[in-house]
Length: 99
Image: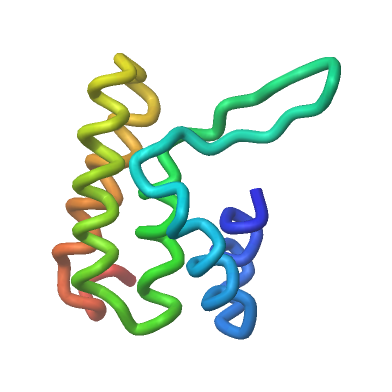
């Protein structure tokens, strides 16, 4: 969830540390939970793809979204698949076309 917050707020100062922390979990499903509940949030690679542009890593973003898309498909999650597809398509646009 930290990656989602950092991305939503465009906190470049926090993006590098979150990106580094999450890199160990590439290819996995991220989530939150406690002793009474668990919530799967989607492929970690999708979060890494969101963080990458904040760090000037546009090509890395596309690579992360590609991995996230494949993982979402393997999980059979239509919502995660749709999000990854959209983000992958957007990552391939020139920055001025994203406005």
